[in-house]
Length: 255
Image 1 (cartoon, rainbow, N blue to C red):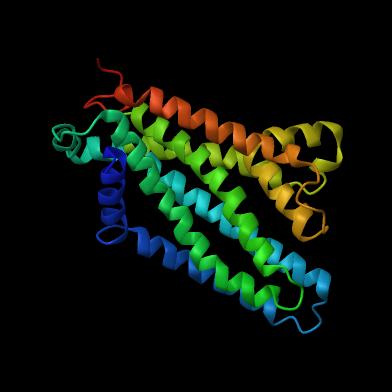
Image 2 (cartoon, one colour):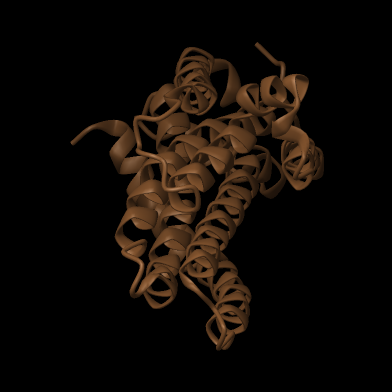
């Protein structure tokens, strides 16, 4: 068995059995239940509004899933430094690169947990418009790219800082900077806005999902909006693997 998979299994077990994973996902399910109830009780909802409701649910699932992934990955190394458990981990016969990759894989299960919770809500809202399956596949493919990419950035923050609060603050600030432009509806309609949307992995992912689910565009239409999520995911994975030995140290920045 690969070293990283052993670390991933142990970290996932700690996260979901003895950790905060179920609590966070339960809170997310309450939020999603509220959104679904408000959308489903709209008796005048037509097909377009149904598609918009499915799109909203998919985007909320992606946004919260990415948020929880970043929070978890930002705690992965700096949190162990503060709790004094990193030294015992370094004494195990596992390479530091395997530790980083395993921890990132475990943090990504937060996104998968949110996706599993989102699927029944997509099915309820998408009945009759053939949008539930499409939304689920879109969320899985696009959301995984964004979650892995930004989760890797959170891992970098965690490895480069000694304070857990600092790494969490950096991760949340990054998400705020990336999410803020997506709340400006008119932004993608301007030339600069389109450029900003395309280079923003979250903005481009949400825009692409909306184009497919609401505007009924084919999947192959304007795939360039997926360039940012793909580039960020691949680039961050390469950096995380290459910088693994420097990230997993008892003190950040030490040799």
